[in-house]
Length: 477
Image: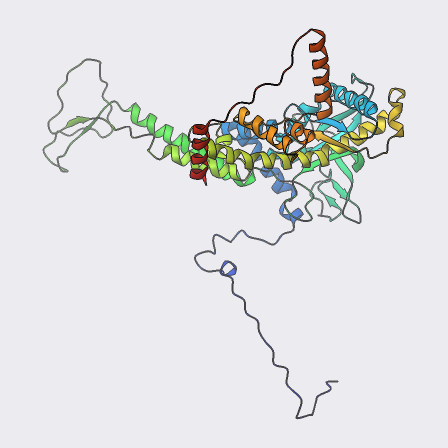
């Protein structure tokens, strides 16, 4: 019962309406068509099996037929994985660390780990996700028989067609009550195989499956192609190129045309419209009364052809964190400073991708390798180590545009104690301990052979070059 009912002194509750206006939230006659496809679906519902299948098909088609798309995907895979990651264990036993690192490197070469990682990175860009099953392979030329079997995204699906959507089964990814994947349903045959597709699948535990994709939304369990925003742009790029080529060919195919300035029903001799007259080389002829001879002006490609392709390709590369000069493999329009600035942003994105690969893919593979290696007599020393061995991964370093300047900067950082040898070698994708041991062996051999190993003279800074570089940097800023 309302406590103030019947009392004259009671205050009345006056409803207060809070109004907040956002222009982007308004639907008008001008923007209704633009926002007609916006929805509020969940991450898994928006990336439904049918949607992901269609996106994969179109992305693969574009990568297979568009030179820019193929080159971009290859560049990302090569820059991310390079020649392959290298393992460095960080335990206190240096001898055991070296033995384990050498054994892992030998196993990685035996299973072609670097090549498989590059394939996985390409599939992540074109398919949106990639899977790998950690299984045994007795034919591997290594004491550890662990193998990394790649699985295409199409094979991870529920074998039941037209089944109702379930929160616990995201198209072959079975979740537990906490939302963690615990089982993967992997079809035994690819749905697009040329043979008869048998609706059979294997249930593989999550401990044996590596699932690498980029999570764009909370609650997302399947990936979409990373080049999805660029797919319409790739189509426009190819259509525009073909249209310009067709227009130029059409203009070139017409040797000459007959036209008249006489009005309709005028004095010109009547001719059949679109009639074709064969012309011979070095021949003079007389035209009908009232008609003149002309040629079609080949105004293709248009003056904006190159600029249009550049802008479209620049927009395509943006969704992949690629600068234009890397996407186009062309730095002709860049100066020194702007090229370096673009590369710094790109390689920062590459480092983030390498760290993600290390956490999601490489750490899982290393854990499975150590678990099997500990069972072998040759690797008995690994049994004393903790299950989670401290380690880090090294990838190929990036070459500096000016090695002399980078060497001077490196020497300055080391002299001022603002960096370490481990950090500087890591920039080059090298293990500082292995490099120092190699350098010590080289010096020892040089002493035995009577060779001197005096330090190289430091190059003097070129004031003119520094001034030009500073000017370029200011122009880029």
